Length: 505
Image (cartoon, one colour):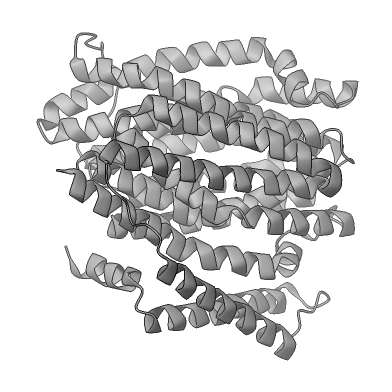
C-alpha cells in the first residue's frame, strides 16, 4: 500500500504543480473578478456531476468488486469492466443532456446572489463545460481498472497531461473567446486525461471498450446495486461546495474566487498525499483475507496519511502569505486578493488532517460494502458543514466558509471510525496518547524552525521570482528536515514502512 501510494504521489506531484501553474495563468488573465466568479460557479457545477458519478460512486462501487473478481478470473473481470463502461456511457450522456437543459436553474441555486449579467455568463459556461463529464467518467473507470491491476503511476500522472493541454490552449482560446475559452480548454484537458490512461491500458492488455453488458452477471448487478446508494450519499456531499459558493455570492465581490484559489493550493497536499493513499489502500482493503489484515491495513493507511499531512498542514499555514504571493500575485491579482486568498488558505489547512482521516475511512466503508453507513457519514458531514458555515460566516466572512468544511470532515471521520469499529467488533488503535504527544513535539520543532528561518532570511516581496522561489524551497526543506529528524528520533513506524516498500519487489 505504501509503495503504491508513493508511486501515486510521484505522478500526482507533477500534475498538481501544473495545476497550480494553470491557476496562475487564469489568475493573471482574469484575477478575482466577476467573470472569474461565473467561471468558478460553472466549473463547480460540472465537477459536481464528475465527483458524484466518476470519482465518487463509480470508484466506490467498481474497484472493490473488480478487485475481488480479478482474484477469480482476469478474463471475466475484464468483461465486467467493459460491460460497466457501456452502462456508464448511457448514464453520463443522459446526465449531460439534463445538465445542459437545467443549467439556468442550477446556477440560480448555486449562486442566488448573482446579478443578471453574472447569472447569464455562468449559465452559458455551464452548458459548454457539462460534456466534460463524459471524458472524466471514462477516465475514472479506466483508472479504477489500472489501480486494481497494480498500476498507479500512470493514472496519477495523467492529470498532468490534462493540465498541460489546458495551459497550452488557454492563452489562445481566452484571447479569442474570453472566459469561454477557458471552458474549451477544460474540455480539451478532459479528453487528454482519458486518452492517456486508455492508451496505457493497451500495454496492460486490459483495453476498455463498450460491450453489451450481461445484466445477469452477479458482479455487475452488485456494482449497480452499490452504485445507487453511494451516489445518493455522494450527491449530498456535493452540497458542500454549493454551500460555500451560495453564501460567498452574498459577500464582497471576489470572495468566491479567493476561496477557489486557496482551494487549489489545498488540493496540492490533498491530492498528492490523501487521495494517493486512499486510492492505493482501497484495492488492498477489498482483498483483505480476514478482519485482522483489514484492521492492520486501515490503521497503517490512516497513520501514514496523518504522518505526511500533519506537517504539510502546519507548514502551509505558517507560510501562507509568502506562498500565495509567490504563486498568484501578478497581473490583475492585487493586494485584496492576496490577503483574502492567504487567510482562507490558512483556515482551510486547519481541516486537512481531518479530511485525510475521513477520506481513508470512507474507503474502508466502501471495502466493507456498507453503503448505508457511508450515506450517514456523508449526510452528517454535509449537515455539519451547512450549520458551521452559517454560524461562522457572520463573524468571519469568507474565512468562516474556509474553516467550516475542515471541522465537519473531522467530525464525520470520527463517525466513520465508529461504524467501522462496530462492524469489525474490535478497537482499531489508530491514535494513542503517546503518538499524539510525539506529534505535538514534532510540530513545535517545525514552528521553531520556520520562525528561525524567517528571522535569518526575511521574505522580500520586491525580489525576483527566482529569489522568492528559493526562499519557499528553503523554508520547506528546513521544516521538512526538522520534522524528519524528530520523527526518526521518536521511532515513527512510517519510516520503516517506507524502507520496506522500496526494498520489497
